[in-house]
Length: 254
Image 1 (cartoon, helix red, strand yellow):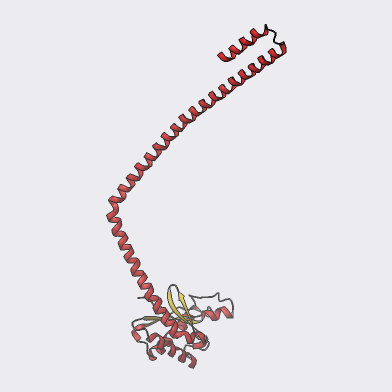
Image 2 (cartoon, rainbow, N blue to C red):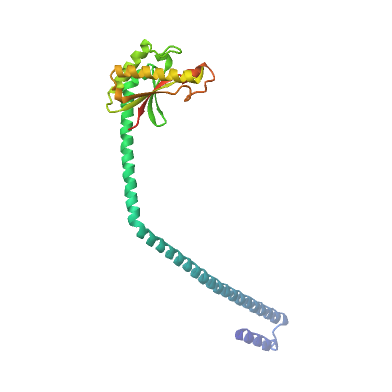
C-alpha cells in the first residue's frame, strides 16, 4: 500500500510538470486495478486459510471419534478373548470328543462301503441278467427280486428259476460271515389286505427256507410280510402294480 501511495503521489506531482492527462489517467486506472486484484487475492487467500483451519479442526474431531470407537472395539475383543480363554478347557474337551466320534463314524462308513461293494461285485452277474436289483433304501443295502422271477401269480412256492437265482444269492451272502439279513415280502393292492399280508409272509418264508438250504446260516436270517402297505409305485396300472410285487433282502446294520 505504501508503494502504491508513493507512485500516486509521484504521478500527481508529475501532472504539474507537463505529463499528458490521458497518460496520467491510464496509469492511475492501472494502479487501481492492480490494487483491487491484490485485495481480491488477499481475500481469497484468507478464505482458503480459514477453510483449511476448519478442515483441520473437523479432522481432529473425526480422528478423536475414530480413536474412541477403536478403543471400544478393542475392549470388547479383550473381554471376549478372556471369556474364551476361561472356557478353553471345556471347549477343547468337547471338540476332542466330537472329533473322536467323527473319526469312528468315518471308519464305520468306510467299512460299510466296503461291504456294499463286495456284495455288488458278487451279485453283478445276476444284476446284469436282470434277475435282481441292488439299491440303498432308507440307508440300507437292499436286494430287490421281482415276483415273476420267483413265483407264479398268487402263489408262494418258488419256481425253478427262482430257486436257482436264490442259490446264487445265497453264495454271495455266505461270503460275508457275521452279517444279518431280513427277507421282506411285498404285494400290490389287488385283493384284500389280510390275504396280501398272508401271501407276502408266505413268500418271504419260502425265500428264507431256500436261502438256508443253500448255505446261509439260519441265525443270520429273519423274514417279514408287509402286504400292500409299503409300495414303491402307485398301483394304478399293471406296470406299477408289478413293481410293488417283490421280495427284498435287506442287510441289517450292526
